[in-house]
Length: 474
Ligand SMILES: Cc1ncc(COP(=O)(O)O)c(C=O)c1O
Image (cartoon, rainbow, N blue to C red; front, side, top):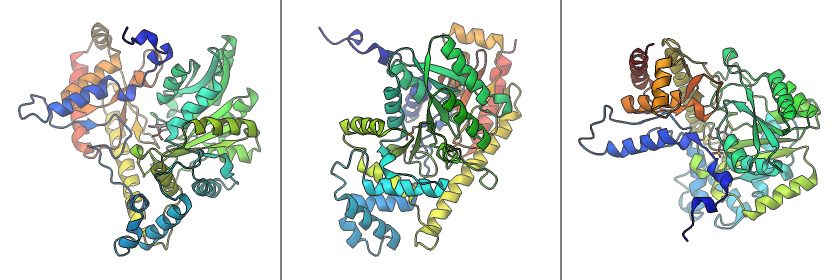
């Protein structure tokens, strides 16, 4: 008998990950069709507004030169001698130092990650927060996703264990909970207040879950948020920590967008680690970071780390054991983490270029986000929180009964129906709000702010929106 789906773990069939779902697949098919001379499509390019993958084809964010130089030199160490006149002195010195610490990057490293790189991560955290960080509590990972998935796996002991997740959320969380048969306990962010996290709502969600026989084990916070881009204020973080303490929840702080703030002169990112330390709280905390976001955008290199805080040595040892089953994260990703936490400093040969490159990325992202939010807010039947951080906007669309009926007749969620029609008409690929979760009867879609040529494609989006709304006017 050939293997059939029913022979496999049924939990996997429940996993959903909309970011790479129906819309992305259709966009890919259109992209191929566009190669044909008579493609017959009403657009000539796909606008990749569905994924936070800055260096993806079509988005083409340039990698940071310094990190790539270190990557190239550590990949092929003879270049350190051969490239004396080609590479800046600080990149050469950095590569030499890393090669001396690591040896060949073709070898497995310590399962927790190269100790030298973990020490650099600990220093970065200490400088950021003003509190010590122990490199023994740093685990380098294959991107933040791997760490999140491991922690969720560890926390879920049975089908009645749950984890609080923000709604809307990044679908990694619902996917991991489905995979490990845990219960997602939603707490809703307040869109009318700029996607605010209200600690009281979190507490109410905890109590409701308990009343329904679910045991809350963890509290996920995404700061800045995906898909909302919202940034938590210090006081909200404080109160969330208190809720976690009160109900003995492990805090899972997803801080992969900590460097993506659009109003950097007035905003400040507060890490959970800092506030937990301010409060001298004993709450268990795991904080995640990644090289995929920020200004590095090295998604394909797969590098990240998590820091555990207030976890017992036995639990850290168990995490270590589980990490060692997969041997080690890729060395290229670990070196990427080193460049993330040790960028060039003023006075270093690479500093000026690094500053120019990173400033340009921050500015472009901030200006695209602002322009798109402004224009979306002028549309009838749409509103959009002008997000202060991350890489996304999550506009709300007000769809008529007629549009909803047409969507259901086509077997689609109404916002998926809208997003598919947008893709068909303009080549703009988004992700519909149902993939992230939203309040019953509300509709959204997520738009990334990474694509150049905003004026051109927002114009197309506006035209499409007006036509769609007119077609389905009740
Ligand atoms: C909130 C959030 N967490 C984690 C990840 C995964 O990051 P990584 O590429 O480091 O696995 C993403 C990716 O988009 C994300 O948006």
